[in-house]
Image 1: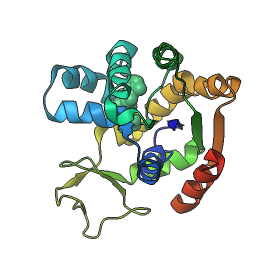
Image 2 (image 1 turned 60 degrees about the vertical axis):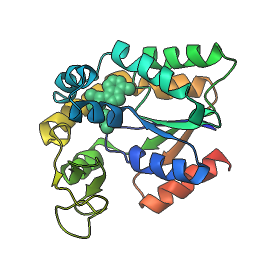
Image 3 (image 1 turned 30 degrees about the vertical axis):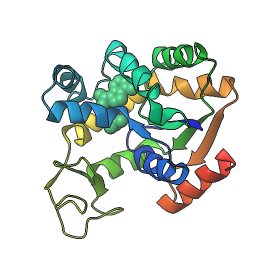
Image 4 (image 1 turned 180 degrees about the vertical axis):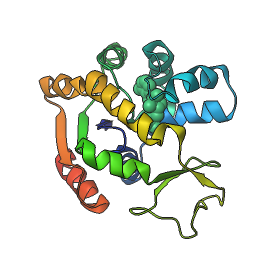
Length: 214
Ligand code: AMP
């Protein structure tokens, strides 16, 4: 099953994508995680991406598309995958579709996790990320066992630059302008599925399973 997760930054699509990947035993491919790993490792891609990410802007399509197209062609993607954070623009969606069509393939579902902007701003202020492994938590909704310390690897938690309030507002603007049009794009293809992202995490997950019909 090839699934795309859509939703505003902070809608919880990353959390849900991980759970879906686990349930269906398919790779979870997060472009945000790929960029953050590159930043951490000081690669050229990471340095280029960081200048955009820190400002709440999208990384240019040409730095993202080839990377994802290469990734989904790897062996572990044969039975499917879940894309989290890609595509974020119509040209990205078109380049993915073209790459898949070239091998007689297509995306099965685009799942949109709907959350109003007001909820997003509240949520992201409480989000904390691990400097070690990149795991994300929330001060209220998904707290760690020990405050400020990652449950998975024991490293320190921080408020990511791109989760700071002024950057969140900017990212929401970018989302509405560049990413939201993908909802119509996938609706037009008959593969859009929508779920309410404001309810409890487990209920969002169940709703996704229901719309995927699996
Ligand atoms: P995320 O963790 O998915 O919220 O991504 C964090 C940041 O990485 C975004 O705000 C963008 O700057 C960048 N990014 C991630 N995925 C993409 C993409 N598909 N296209 C452009 N920029 C991206």
